[in-house]
Length: 293
Figure 1: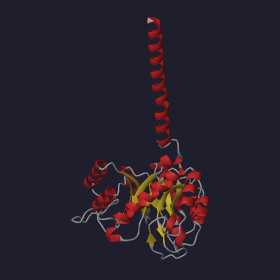
Figure 2: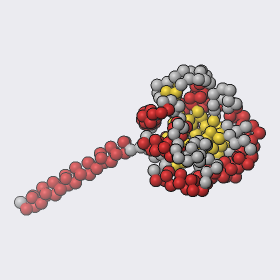
Figure 3: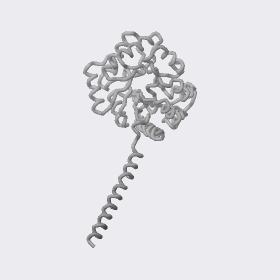
Figure 4: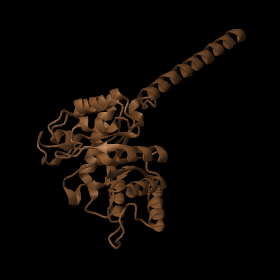
């Protein structure tokens, strides 16, 4: 009888262990399916903001606005006044004290200054100063529309400083309105890449996905915006997903190319109170990227 009880107890114990062991893989499987894939191309994408979105406000206020929208990556632009009570502007003329203050502010908010643009230095000395400034501030690339006479110089300095140039496209009559002109500037200049402004291509009457394909392998940044009317250089901005650009196709193309850069939200609308718009764009972007995984 004792042997029988011992045998039954052993069976019960084994049954309990079997149930517990069976429970564990089910839990692990659930966790694995819901966790983001760190090997996915989109896991290396950054969502930032081009501070021109908040250009009606000083730099420090713009940073607060970006922070309130949950954005941690910044593309600054030259000449934005630092604060309401300061005559100093963001850029190469900043004092050492102001540079330190900007760095401290960004660090305190967990923000990274990724890019500076749109820059178009007018002299060789100004080009060198811009790269010196970018290096000191930890900037990774310069969004630029360089004059043809400076293509070689800009490329050389980019190599020396380890900071790439990303050519930006404005609407016509900008010399870089079409991706072919960006490709021409890249030829023989290994440190010159592209910043794809999606909204401006649509304003120029260009197929955004086809433009991306033309620049495949050379895009290191993008200005994320949508517009209300195709092929109208004066078309107003709208929230991405509500305008003419087919963003599911656009994001799919970025993924196909293995893009590993930053999308800078540049919302040129509702200037006085556009943080709610920016938050909508963040939500839309996250929804679209989630569908790509």
